[in-house]
Length: 327
Image (cartoon, rainbow, N blue to C red):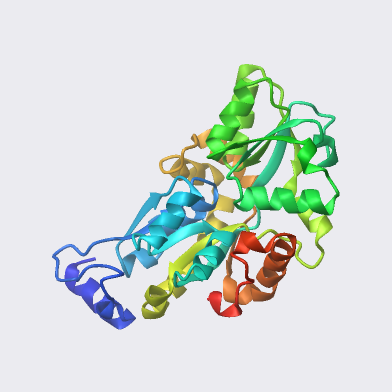
């Protein structure tokens, strides 16, 4: 798109009035790109496809980058470096309660969590008592979901020897390399990549527990885990609503395209995610991709956050989120 056409499109969208918080002035010959920050997980695959193939890129130049840990994500919004990013749903709530004016835009996956074991007889959460478990992201969403489910099933979590690590790749590699661990709480696509690596090394691992299935059986009022989606600075959203309507449609189409073009999607994803093509391809059936606007599933989000709040209010910053947080 040439500069004049871009400028006209920008003005029609209201982009010409964006403040310094958003993007610099469009007086440049080549307008700066909006960086959309993805996560180092399979949630970002639909985001990458939407950025590359969708119509939103014709309305505003887009760039994809990835944060590595939830702490980097929090710092990006606290320091005003991030405008739009994939995020665990609870992080958006916590940022809001810390006084950072963000909105929860959508949910892009209803759960990426699986517990792998080296003993096929471990089939329930109760079976983990007395065992050694690797778990990434202490006090973030995977850990929260695990703690909530253990509480619901009266599993004595103090009897599980939990080794917390910083990232899913670290969890996966540690599990495959060390015989001392019985299980790992893994997220896709690293879960499937780990399984392929273990097979190559002659290590037997089993996808023993589908965390999403247990959750749906446990919480009938909230059968899905709205694990992650996009969060956005409120002012940027308000000034660019036409752009976000197009981006959301791009995401819906991206989910459909991935389902019908798994090999091609895996090839694209391998260029951006810390996972080889084979791992991404194997993970897609377990991704639980979706593209739901938060305002459209507000009741489901309220139900999920109520479960987390009732377990430990501190995990949400001490308050339940208001419905005004969902756009």
